[in-house]
Length: 301
Ligand code: TA6
Image 1 (tube, protein in one colour):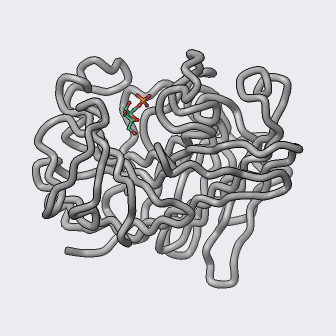
Image 2 (cartoon, rainbow, N blue to C red):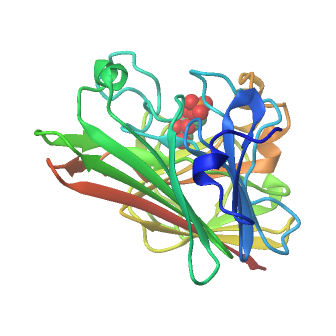
């Protein structure tokens, strides 16, 4: 990785450096009091976060991820926007929208009094975006790095008509061994089972993953917790601006069908996603904005 011309405008000594990352994409390297992170300017995607003292990254990043224009990077936090999942209008547009497979702009960085560092990235509408999604907008992601990682995704409607928005912070969390993982905080919450024609279901007790899972939870009760006995840690996820969540693990067969995952990848990852998905649609009125947030705190067991 070599240094990058964006440093002239954005570098902050000891805190923010831009390097040329895989695929030649600019990558922001953030060093803060309490933690460090790497954020790709392509796709506006956090690829790595490590709290000080943690041996393991918070994020799973596929060894076979694509770093190429038009492709999504498998791992970290892909931004699903302005729709979550398949094209809601069935026009054959890309799954999970138009943000995760295009270049963004670096907007700025800031060191806070408490030593946290925030980096902001975004993009607005253009002829290219309007050809796919005919709305005027500015989308901004603020990544705040410290002892915790906080993501805030703000959608501004800069046009004259309201638009519906679904979206997701599709984080791939690194786990030591999926067989030793439990997800808490969604007990008895109604979910739509994406692997069973979106049948409505619920289950008592923590979530245990022992087969392919793709669930859209339709309400949040509070924090979601990933308990990972193999890595001896719990990840607490606090969501804001969201009343839905997705839990996804592709398991062996679907992993084998994905060219950007190695065969055992599913044993080392779980996606627990802060979303506005399915009926959790946000209508963004002209001149208004909506912010979706997720904060990740790593605790011991
Ligand atoms: O968030 C879960 C999900 O929507 C699944 O349905 C699955 O398709 C996954 O995302 C990954 O999608 P991708 O297009 O990144 O392979």
